[in-house]
Image 1: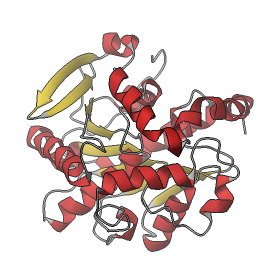
Image 2: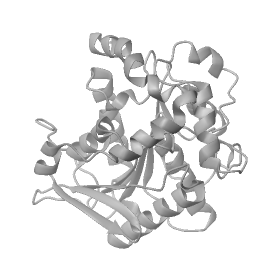
Image 3: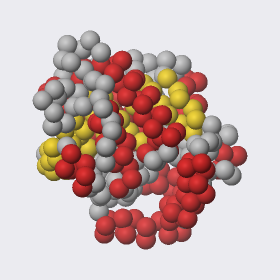
Image 4: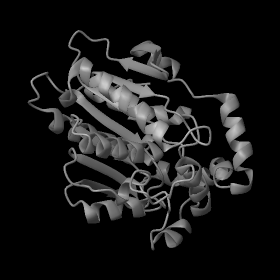
Length: 310
């Protein structure tokens, strides 16, 4: 573990306390709604072409490469937040860093959140934005990225597209995905003792809000329990100090076709952190996307100079 990662590991509990306390869940949600979703950093909005639009009834933010050698790649980014919180400022590092490495554009929908909405509304919003993107550039040029709850939403989206016989994205890239909303992995109580960010109790409470009366282990709610065949190439990043590492390991057990990058000692969504381990994970994700989109007839992703990114 790098020194930066070790220092951050010690600081995380001080910042994650509100997101571990079930007793204050309603209050934390109200505060989150009052603040609203974070916009991409100003430097990113200056470096890339930025737009804030409504696609139907879904607010969608886009960051696009300004270069003359723009590629048709579209990164559909589904943010995490336990299905109940708006995107936080630090989460923007994932799509922005990948955009800097690959070119193309990042498209981020603000999908409906619980408790005001349920999983049906969230998946429907993600699906509508995805179908608009494939009309724009073809499914072979779309890669779906998600972290935490957004990773689970990304997998649910792909499973629903498969079941409906609709075009699948070129790849899925999942960072610390939440795939079992029941949080019933046998190993999770032991992992919780070293997880600085998450608690089983908090996740279960948030999962019930998203399920909205449906069973939390319903395959449509918890994609770990759905059929895993016939999905796009998938890479999963997980850290061993993360309760949700259990989800990643269990997914690999039922779908050996996925690529699992498991980082010893890393915490929840460490890839978004400014640490060497985060940069390495993003480099691996970019390489996976290049491979998945190579030879697609539209140029695909490219190797880019990633210096001086915001």
